[in-house]
Image (cartoon, rainbow, N blue to C red):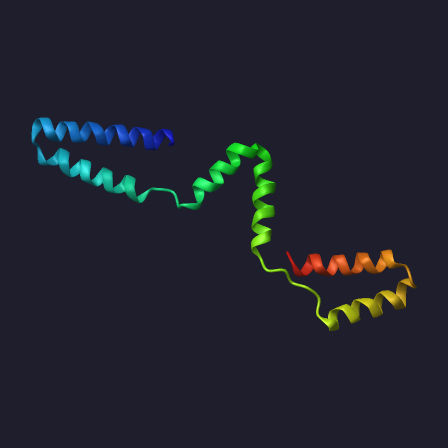
Length: 114
């Protein structure tokens, strides 16, 4: 809970106590408004999971979340046309080294799966 949220929660409790003791509508109205604002300001459900990851992995959490998010995207492979285009271009310029073809294919797949 953030400092501001804790302060708002304490203020809400004080307003509720004041409304109960003083029976003044302004305190109960203020308590209702503050309660509603606190309920609306809840973080989205996925934040709990992200906070758990950050607590467990520290600064490495950013890489972990990025890798996890990347696994959520569907893989985009090469079409036969794209493969043939890369192969023909590589074959015309680089001869027959498999390493060059591998580099060209890897670059194209990285481009498609950003």
